[in-house]
Length: 171
Image (cartoon, rainbow, N blue to C red; front, top):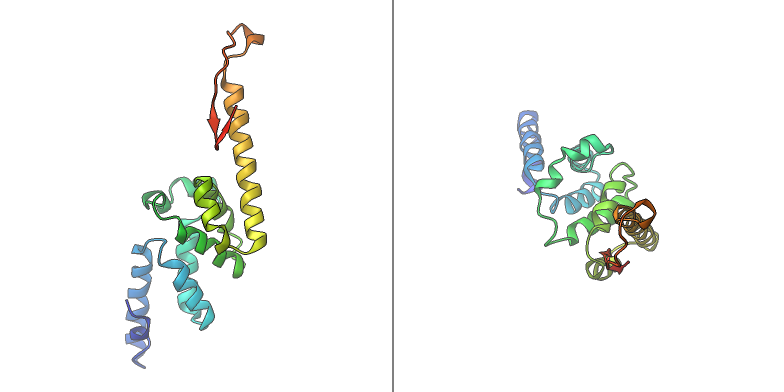
């Protein structure tokens, strides 16, 4: 969809129809196009478009667990192309979109360490730090949960040394 077509006519009806078409296109779009549209709409002061992009982002990356569980983001295959999420995290950081940052940090922290290291240079330095600290915290929490779920000799279970890998760390 070409943005310039939305603004080519001075007719209010034409503009309204274009805006509605744009809104529908945004709702059907994947997360991959959103960083570019967000940057463009902010840079060129397209307030109406930026508002629609923000609504779309807030629906994909909601600020409550209940909304996150039902978000459309789960239907998008993110494992094979993490770069757009890192780009969106950088854009959310740059434009101070605080409401979507926690979910973006979480989703970016779930990628393999090799992927994260490869994409870290696309982020601002303080954003890199937040991502790595958050990823480390999630890994430590996962490790703790695994350790707590293993049988313990204190409670009558048999202790068998088991090597468990969580976040690339063997226990």
